[in-house]
Length: 124
Image 1: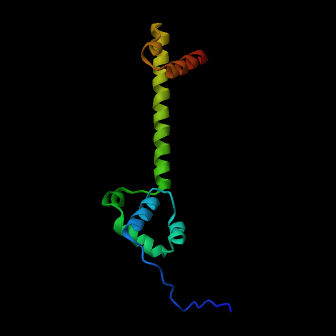
Image 2 (image 1 turned 90 degrees about the vertical axis):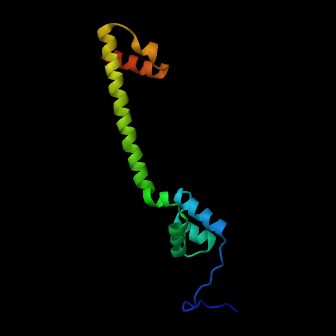
Image 3 (image 1 turned 45 degrees about the vertical axis):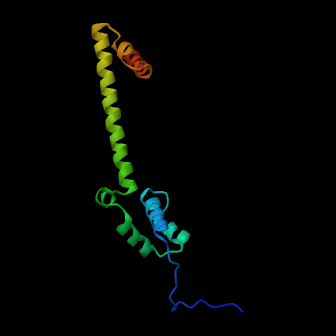
């Protein structure tokens, strides 16, 4: 005989040990798993998982933690700034080589950067 679902009855969950709680919190904070997926995987309510995160995450993570999207956006901005600085420095080195006639890049920079500067210089 098939049992009917009884929505008025409370669902009972199994108790979870501390190691599992810490594992779940670590996976969520590192972006390996979402809260919803963890709730389904470990058969625990999402509110409980949020409580675990609040209790078991380190104080440093709570203070300075940022969402993955914000972190990715911040890193992309940093990459753009560094690429701009690199391009500017290469332009300055290229200009100095043209003015002085000395190959500064070949003497002091790695081959890949020296090649990039040489390509830029040919473009002038």
